[in-house]
Amino acid sequence: MSRKHHSHGHHINLFTPGLPPQTLTPHAYINLPDKEALVSEFRGKSLTHLRTPALVIDRATFAENCARMHKRALKLGTGFRTAEGIRLQLKSSASETHSVVVSTLTEAWGILHAGLVADGTVNDILYGLPISPAKIADLHMFRTALSTYGAVLRLMVDHPYQVRALEAFDREHPTTNPSLSRWNIFIKLDVGTNPSSRRAGVTPLSTELNGLLDTCIPSASVSVHGFYAHAGHSYASTSQDQAASNLHTELSAVNAAAGQAIPKYHAHGLPEPAFVLSVGATPTAHAVSGDNIQVPNPLNGAIELHAGNYPMLDSQQLATNLVRDQDVSQRVLASIASYYTGRGDGDEAMCDVGAIGMSKDSGPIPGFGKVVNILREGERIVWRPRETGWTLGRISQEHGILTRTNKCAPEEEHDILRLGDVVGKFDGSSPALRLLSVQIQAIVGQHACLTAAGHPWYYIVDSKDESKGSKVVDVWVPWKGW
Image (cartoon, rainbow, N blue to C red; front, side, top):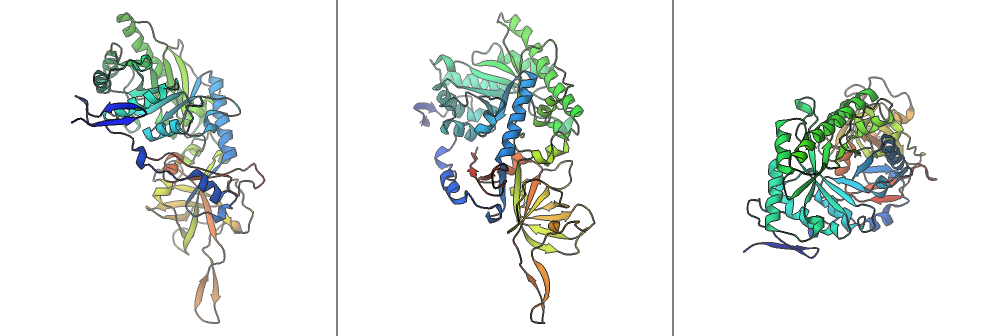
């Protein structure tokens, strides 16, 4: 007996000949925290009163970063596609977009269920990795739900088997809905320059791309929307020139791939498509601010800029020298749990955040995160980052070890980490450790995206309100799950 699933009024047979068993997003079992309850509990609280570890985002800086990215897209004269997120990423003081890319189907369904499609905020969703054939039924149910609002789902492919899987599904599940007659796809390109920088995708001008195009173009199940490139290795850029060079690599790749495809359409007697050439990583998108951007000529389509990390930023982005310390909108707050005098180069301390709350990603800046603020109860909290001389030098699953970034003692009293003070003797007897103050430090980690994935919700502050970012003004709840 075949298994069937009912969602949004649509029946799906979960067994399709030639395909692996189909899997579905388990909506009934993904119970996210209650945003209203969180806001009621935490709004107005000082950062020093939050349970640590805690991810804190400055809404003002986040919004400024979104506006700057929208301006870059306007300067390049392109469309813009942001990562899944909030309305600030879609509409800023500079411009707006209705196109997003998601990395999980839970995020995609979350956008739909949040009403962002129904109210027209989002009308174009790209599932941002080459499809797994086991998820086609779920993708079909999602695109059917989107079509109710006139919105579109785009997929990504980089292998002929993925196209054959879509064809097999369509044979089993024919549709009379003209908006669902073909799957709308981007062909994912690999623009890595060495073995360590290779990513998902096919290489432009390769026999593999030829074979994929020969599968896609005559297929009755897919329509090629365009070509998509992401220079992940651009995170190693350390200057605007290097990032611009990586952007040129992305642009050249998508343009060459489109040029490779056009004669094949002519050979099949098909009209030449209006391809979308989607390029970007946060460093290459930042490079658009410069004056040395080389756009291929002739251009075989319309450029679309995409990026994801830019609203929050992190140590990896700081290392590119394309952003400033004050542009980083996120911090992880952690408490000092223990202190080790004389250990290492100028003392060490233990804090209560580890790999789960920070990630184990590394980058050009040593360590797993830079301590940029030290917070104490009763003192004025300053959101502006400052050098403290401390870094998250070693990391375990649930805790980390803070180390000095140099062998010298801290120059300022504020930068002396303490669990408490050694206060001599009580009543003329044994020495004791007296807890004088709550110690919390704010850390900018290596990779904001992976850091954020480890937190159930995010505390929001606003550095431009009367509290200057010292009190919670909102709580954001991310969509979790696969």
